[in-house]
Length: 310
Ligand SMILES: O=C(O)c1[nH]c(=O)[nH]c(=O)c1I
Image 1 (cartoon, helix red, strand yellow):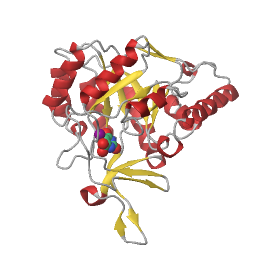
Image 2 (cartoon, rainbow, N blue to C red):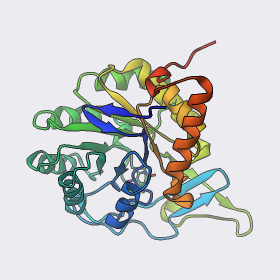
Image 3 (cartoon, rainbow, N blue to C red):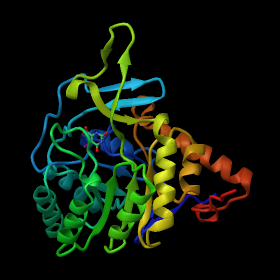
Image 4 (cartoon, rainbow, N blue to C red):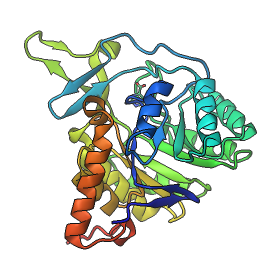
């Protein structure tokens, strides 16, 4: 079967990438993703300056997923811009440069530097980091989202995607989609972790991560129903020109199939990529192909967005 996808003339051999944040902070980790079956690689969300991030323990695996409050540890914007440009020079177009400035001004500064560079690939503006103490997620402030997009598109003409937090109210999908449809966005990526969850250790009767008194973003199996709902809701509301990347709760070919059935063009794996490593990409794409063959689908377009109601 044909697993190929094109996003604005950028061709992917298969739709399965890593999600920003997991095993993608160093060039070594990013090289390993590109050397694997993954359809492409996403960089750890960058801030203008390097950051150490929050105190440890800041990520724990849970029975059905993960909880994290990493606090945006990264080697700084220049490190990642250099990497994606070097990959572009080497002929690789399947990179996504993720940025997560701590202010609208910092995001615009990074976008201006990208605009001034030779980078032609996808850019993911992360508006949904839940783990910087004192900072609420821009994605939950619709006026701030509108402000940043209005400012960005006065100068930025690259391929801009937005990484959004999960929404849980249908009126939010209506209101935010009306804003997003006003801009030439390349894609929306739903979802980021479900912010400020809590996990408890029965033996010690403590929380399991140190930052923010134990509150952190939830990922993995726990979040798939929310991810599928967000992908479906945005697909039904956004201009077809705005593609969708599905993230959240993927650890099998079936999960990928479900994300694409709900409308995803690409998908990203975060939590499950952590313990399994790069072999997950071959396993999941093989499982997807098996499902497609069993159902008689020859390409992703045969079933993308074709979820039926009953
Ligand atoms: O704590 C983090 O670094 C982090 N953790 C997440 O779960 N999502 C994010 O977007 C980020 I930037």
